Image 1 (cartoon, rainbow, N blue to C red):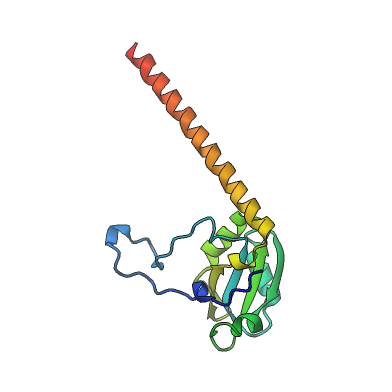
Image 2 (image 1 turned 135 degrees about the horizontal axis):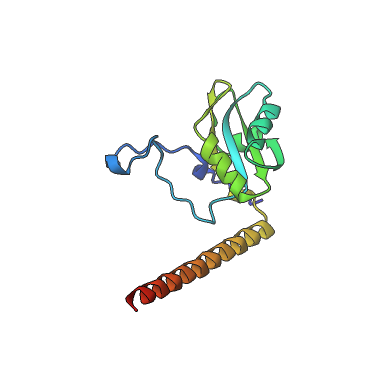
Length: 165
C-alpha cells in the first residue's frame, strides 16, 4: 500500500453534458479514461449508508465475482479527504480484474439502501506483485489479439486470392 495522501482521483466527477447527442450513451457519465495502470482489483465504495451494512455490501458485490476481502475504511479515508456525512467507505479486493470491472460498471451510481454508491478503482492498494501480474496478463491479452488479427487477415487475403483465381 502506498503512503500517498492525495486521494483526489477518488472524488466523483461531474457528468458530461456537452457531448454531441450521437456520442452520448443511454445514461450520463463523467469523462474519464482508464488505463491498465489505473484499473485495479481493489475498489473503494463510497456512499454506503452508515447503518452496519457490511454483510449486505458483501452479498451485493459477490454477485459479480469472488471477493478476497472487504473492510470498512471510513476512518482511514476520512482523515485524507472529506466524506459525505453518515456514510461509510469500503475497500473491496476481488480475485480477478474482470470481476472488479463488472462490479464497478454495474453498481457505480446505483441506489443502495437510500444512498447512491460511488465506486472507484484503488490501485494505490496494489502490491508490486499484483502490478506485475496485471501488466503481464495485459501483455498476454494484447499478444493474443495481435496474433488473432494477423490470422484473420491472412485468411481474408487467402479468400480474396481464391475468388480472383
